[in-house]
Amino acid sequence: MSAHSHEIEEGLAFLPRFDAAGLVTVVATDVATGDVLMVAHMNEEALRKTVATGEAWYFSRSRNALWRKGESSGQTQRVLEMRTDCDQDAIWLRVEQTGAACHTGRRSCFYRRVEQADGGGDARLVFVDADRLFDPNTVYRK
Amino acid sequence: MSAHSHEIEEGLAFLPRFDAAGLVTVVATDVATGDVLMVAHMNEEALRKTVATGEAWYFSRSRNALWRKGESSGQTQRVLEMRTDCDQDAIWLRVEQTGAACHTGRRSCFYRRVEQADGGGDARLVFVDADRLFDPNTVYRK
Image (cartoon, rainbow over all chains, first blue to last red; front, side, top):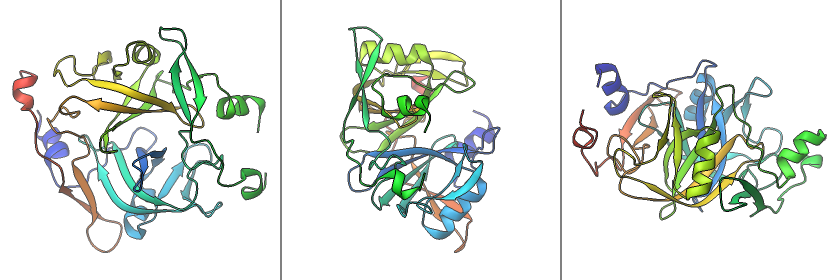
């Protein structure tokens, strides 16, 4: 292992490895249930604001903009713990979620199970935990 | 919302949205603890093999190769549940992990906490749950 890899994997300096677009992948889990709520991205500014405020900030690839989680919907995330992985290109947030994490109004973005369809590699989806906690048409005024 | 977005978000067809490199992001959590074990990627073949076999297969970006989790280390992942998210560009696996998920020998790749360093946006790392379950120098014969 190179000295640089060793520093990244075994060091105590936070050296996030941003991709070509300047982003790291972020997984937010619900501190109460352990469920994955969402997978999103942060740029350097979102990371700094999350560390500084204890609330989750992300970078929206579709809107190309920094984004405080819940700024439109009120569905904020309080960060109880933040971790990074071995190669420091991913972040895990354990959060206290107000209401729903998903823009569709569901608690989690992962409201469909992938099931084997034919005994082989094909799959179909099945709804699970898919109740809506808010109406996105009202909240986002589409 | 377009008809296509509606189909992606509310439909029951599994239509994974691969990125420019042909990959989706995958989060594996420990079914026993809810802890995030790792964040990795799958290409279409890895997805199909995971669905077909009930064991986790990934695509290694560093080795540019399909990879059955545990093929070198013996630390396999049995998939108890697989979900996809609203826009179908991420996968959540709830797995039964044999031994350690991380190539460093730790149970999880997320063995360091990110802590605020100065009362602002700067951060440092602290080891948590960092015991090694195997010696990577032995297992991978470096």
